Image 1 (cartoon, helix red, strand yellow):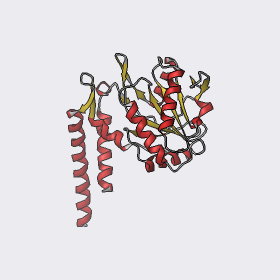
Image 2: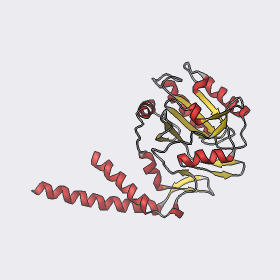
Image 3: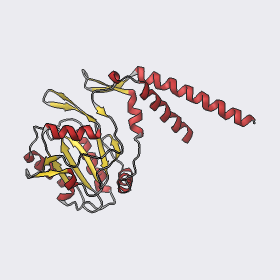
Image 4: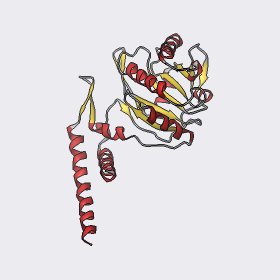
Length: 253
C-alpha cells in the first residue's frame, strides 16, 4: 500500500510539473511550505486597533482567510473548524490560537467583531476571546499576506471565488501545513499544531489529488480536467511498469 501511495504521489507531482503555467487555475493555492509570514504587516482588530501579525503570532496558530459577507464556502469552513476545535485536546490561548483575516478590503472592524462573537458562541468549550482573532485590512496588506501563503482568489461581482483551506503557522511565523476542505479531523489538526511547535512541515496529499480538477468560471465550480487526468494516468502507468519490472527482476534473482 505504501508503494502504491508513493507511486501515486510521484505520478501527480510529475504531471503537475509538466502542466504549463497558463493551464493553472486563477483560483486555488500555490503552496509555500516553509515560508515565513510577513509578520510586519498591519491589520485592524475587532476594536479597530492596529496590530501586526508578529504581535499576535507567538504560539501555534490556525490561520484562516475568509471574508465576512461570504455566502459560500467560508461558513461551512469556519463551522467545520469550530467542530474540530470543540474536540481538540489542546488548551486555547496556551497551546494554540486562531487568527482569521478578511481578504476583502471592504470589510470593517465592526463586521469582524460580530463574526467573532458569532463563532465564540458556537464553541462548546471554554475558549478565551483572545484565542480567536478576526482582522480586517487594506488591499496592499492583504495582498502581501495572501501572496506569502499562495492563496489565490478572484472577484465575482460583489463576491469572491476562493479555495477552502486553513494554514498552520509556527510560533515564529513559519508556514508548516495546509489543510483543505471544510472538515478537519481533530486528530489531524492536533498533529499539525504539535508539529508546528517543532516547525516541521508536511506536504498535502489532498492538494496533489486536487490537481486533476480545474475551475469552471461559468459554472462557478471545479470540474475534472480530462487533459490533466489522462496525463497523470499515463505517468502512473509508466511508473507502475518500471516498478513491476524491477520487482519481478529481483524476484527471479
